[in-house]
Amino acid sequence: METEDLVNLDADGRGMVRGIVELSETPVKEAMIPRIDTVFVAEKSDIDDSIARVMDSGHSRFPVYRETIDNVIGILYVKDLLGFLTKGEKISIPEVLRPAYFVPESMKLDSLLKEMKQRRVHIAVAVDEYGGVSGIISMEDILEEIVGDIQDEFDNEGEEIISVGENEWICDARMNLEDLNDELGVNISADDFDSLGGFVFDLFGKIPGRYEKVKWGNLFFIIQSVDGYKIKQVKIVKENTAL
Image (cartoon, rainbow, N blue to C red; front, side, top):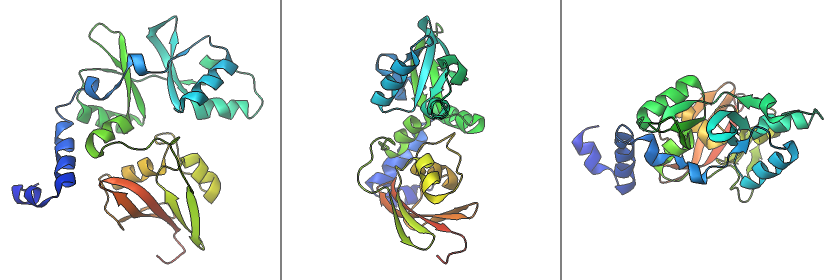
């Protein structure tokens, strides 16, 4: 970006640019959720107790440990757990774990973001120089370093989706992707992102502006409302409908 362009940006724009630049200078340790604030699940936890705990926490992914917190053996995704339970299957915590991705807490955020996108993982476990677990960090934590706080998928208010015409909807960017799939009868993968906003942000590969659009499959995603550089509302249009 040219110096003149930077000068012409408003305060929010300059802040965003600084945030992007600072990713290469900011270590994981400064953006992660520290160990003391992380909700861990024990490998041998009673399944019913674990369900109650994770649902009460409002989060969707949890590190699972064996004997001590420094021995994380995998990541528990709530949607994986509920997927088995809705089928009436009896399971144990280890049966539904996904592999944990470990990173040094000294790793720079720009490198981590690139790695997470390549590996298609949403969360990483940070370890200190002695190999102990020091916290966890998600892709949202990194994006927040650029654009400020992103609303969690459990922090919804009001209508999440409104039909505005045949095959046209206005959606809250915080809407859970699995709920969106159910509402629209589509199959957007929720493995990497929980919210519509996170998915759309990734499709653009940049901070989109109002009315910018991007296509995925037979769907168009059009930015309807933004707050600074945060996506607030997205219009979804099926391809056979005029924009």
